[in-house]
Image (cartoon, rainbow, N blue to C red; front, top):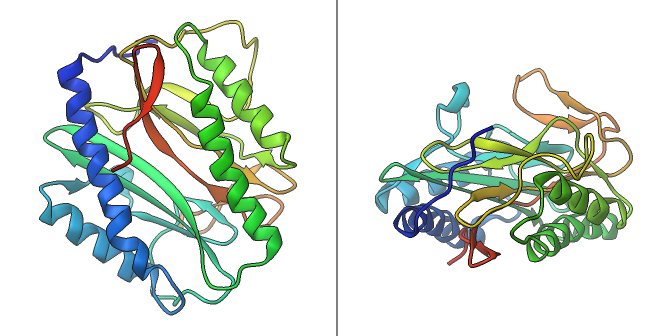
Amino acid sequence: MSIALRKEAEIEGLRRANRLVAQTFEHISPMIKIGTTANQINQAAEDFIVSNGGRPSFKGLYGFPGAVCTSVNEVIIHGIPDDRPLENGDIIGVDIGTEVDGWYGDAAKTYLIGDVSEKDRKLVEASKEVLYSSISKIKVGMRFKELSQILEEEITSRGYIPLKNYCGHGIGRKPHEEPSILNYVEGNPKQGPKIKNGMVFCIEPMICQKEGDATVLDDKWSVVSSDGLNGSHYEHTVAVVNGKAEILSKV
C-alpha cells in the first residue's frame, strides 16, 4: 500500500479544492428545505462549482449520473438526484466532490427537512458527532486500523451500527486513493500502515440503526441498510499537519 505524503504546496492545492466544497455547501444550504427537489440541489451545486473554477468530480465518476449525491431517508450514500420534492420530516444526505487544478475535494452532511422526528434528529446528530470526535483523536503514529477502531467505538457507543463494505479513503490527484478507512475494525488494529504528517484522507461515518449490511437498490447506486431504516452520513477531508488533523473541507 502506497500512501502519498503531500508537501505544503500540494496540501494548499487540496485546500483550494476542499474550500470550494465548503463554499458550495454554504451556497446550497438555504435551498435545502420542504418543496425543493434533489435535482434542483444538484443543479445549483454544479453551477456554483463550475462558476468558481472547479469541476463537480462525481459527475461521470464510475458512471454516476449526478453532480452530487443526494441520499434521502433510508438511502445512506450514493443517492441519485431526482424530481421528488423534499417533504416535511425527510432527512437528506448531500455528498459533494470537486476538482480544482487537478486536486480533489470531498465532504458530506445530512440535512433535516422541516419537523424531523426526534429519532432521526438524534441519528443525524450522532453521525456528525462521530465525525468530529474521531477527527479530534487523529495523531501521527496511530495506525489507520486504530482510527477505524475509534470510528466503530464512537458509532456503537451512541447506539448505532456502522454501514459495512463502504469506507473513507485517501484523496489527492484522484478522488479515491489509498488508504481505505473502514468505520469498523477488520483484523488486528495494531497492524497496518501508520498515519504520518502530509497524509490527506477523508473520514466519513455512515451509520445505521439496527443492521449494518449494505444493499444496493435497483438504480445500481443508492445504498441502504438491510434494516430498511433511515441512516446518516457525514464526511470531511483532513490533512495531517504538524502532528494533528486539519479539516480542509471548511470555509
